[in-house]
Length: 316
Image (cartoon, rainbow, N blue to C red):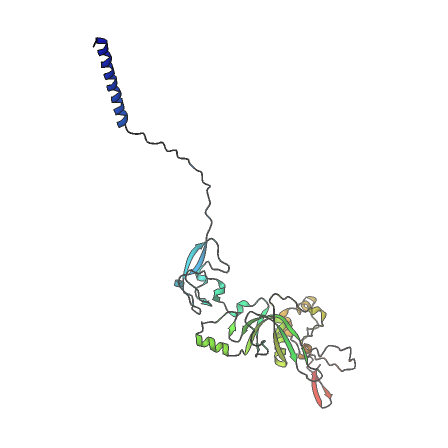
């Protein structure tokens, strides 16, 4: 082997050694960490919705119980339920009408509020006697809307008559049942007794000016309650008929303002109504012009009318 061949062989060995060294370095060098590209997503800023305090039952509350402070809890809701409460002090001392479950919001409909709270301005609650016939077979229930009819038996020159006395009247109570519910939750035996006991009274919500009509009709005739649909708005046109005259007349020296005040419901109720006006006995009858008609007044004097064997004293 000549010298040139030896030199080439040595060069190749050195080159192989260098390449092997670099290969070793590359194999043992740590791998670079992958580059993670983080993309920032802009999220819309949502404003927090306002909340409201709502009073809930902290425990089960039975019908008839008086609400105590420890029976209530306050929670934050997006809105207050209809007829709900936002303060505990508005509920403490109230009587529960129906059972209330824990965590249930307390509303006015769950409380016994008293019958007077169901009256509108200018209304009065009047009690009338009822039986199975008067009360439509005892099927009338508190909250129903009824028409009150009045039947007058034949009396003197006034024949038997029947007419609508008060339309669209709301029933507040019928027997032991009221729109307000029981004051205490009845037991099973009491429920059965209530169903078996016929109603004897009904309480009606009527306007103040109609109280005299109802009282006269109750004392001098027979009433009948007729159920009507709650959405039925048919009412008689009172302007088509003559106005009954009050028992007490206004003073002759009243000013125009005072004369207008006589139409006030309270003044009309105080002036009163007589039975002949209620029955229509004092209205003129064109078919019988010769029939004697004597109108009652408030002079304090009376006249005696003799019809056959009947004698009647009439005020004038």
